[in-house]
Length: 124
Length: 124
Image (cartoon, rainbow over all chains, first blue to last red; front, side, top):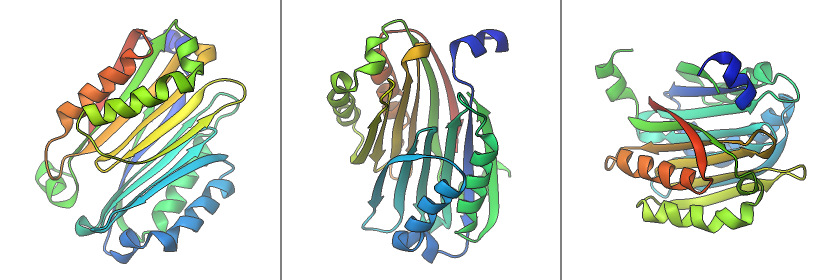
């Protein structure tokens, strides 16, 4: 599909897919210590929360999703691997939220004190 | 990062990013008509729901996320564009959930009676 057609048929949004590696394993287990800060980061980035869902796994790790008016943020942590993945997906209909999405991604990733962050950006 | 290192450092999962186009606009507005069927599709695919979040926009369209023990499914609909995007993301730690993810994607996409579906698969 060429770009011209795609623009007519779809929302142009930015989806950041991130892999985050940390040696601070406690940050991957302790959901309550990061939950409120993540929520605050969404507001600071100028994005609009419209819902949340969360699950803490008995064997360790957690999943957290924030629904945004602009799409969503998701986090899945794997303490046994020193790893989490994070997605920030924003549509850019009423305004370009790309900078807000990148700022949100970086500020939340920083909470886990990573030694490596691998990001992919998908336009969709 | 070469594949050998990646395997040691990360979960290998499958993330399907889908763009779905339909002329059946009512399916993109009427969340209550598809919600339960989507939830049933998760169970039929053999995946495990651990939470949900949803938001119906006053101006039309909805967002629905199902947290899975294996990661998540997300849907954002845009009635004014005859478009929705859907992500099915599964990790493959205890077993390979790739077939289940593809089946889930296809069965949920079908609910919207699409005339075109564009899928990208990201290994992460």
